[in-house]
Amino acid sequence: MKKPVVAALIFLVAAAAAGGVLLFMNGVRERAEAGRVTVDVIVATRDIPAGQELSALIDEGVFRTKSVDVEDLVPGAITDVYQLQGQRTGYPILAEEQIVAARLAGPLQAGGGVLGIPDGLQAASITLEPQRVVAGAIQQGDHVEVFGTFSDRGADTLSTRVVIDEALVLAVARPAADDLSSGSTGTITLAVTPEQAALLIFAQEQGHVWLTLLPPNQAGVHVPPVALGAMR
Image 1 (cartoon, rainbow, N blue to C red):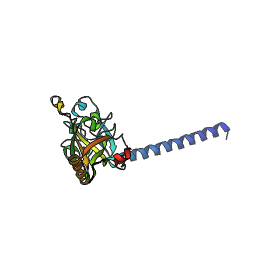
Image 2 (image 1 turned 180 degrees about the horizontal axis):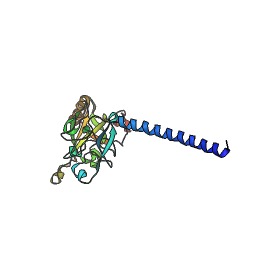
Image 3 (image 1 turned 45 degrees about the vertical axis):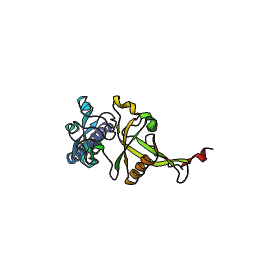
Image 4 (image 1 turned 45 degrees about the horizontal axis):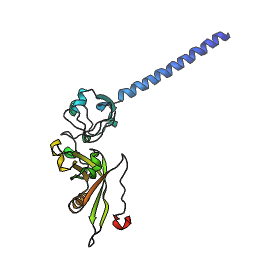
């Protein structure tokens, strides 16, 4: 058999083999896709902060539909954009992540009530002057550390200590423009344990309370109490 003929036969065999592999892979892909079950969920096209009203964002086209595998579906995920009408974010929502009812502060919220209180915690409020709450910079969704200044037992000296090393800010209610003469920056509501709630109430009733704003993803630090003697 002449060499050109042999080469042609080898080429045809190789081409047939490649075609067979391609057909096999296509078949595998088609079978895999045929068995794949997806669900359409609603995602945001940009990051949304806590406390954001969502109706206006719907009108702006901020939300879109995204298909996810059913095994990747997050419990409580929003599947229809109309479920977001009249809602407000209780927590920040990241772009392209599944939006779940627990992150909303409306009637669709799965738990935590209108404030979105995390499981096992309670909501407690405190009203303070601007200098005690970082000049009013604290926002919903922030984390704060709570300090209290008290009179030491049986002495005339004061000491400042950590009351709560970290607490989530659930809401901030600022005074009306015609009520600024009171000197208050408004009322801040925190998510606390029952024990922390007792400490916060005691500190507000018996001492002087200050809040410090924690940077994102940074926990509070429990430092030793500071008394006048330590300042000398």
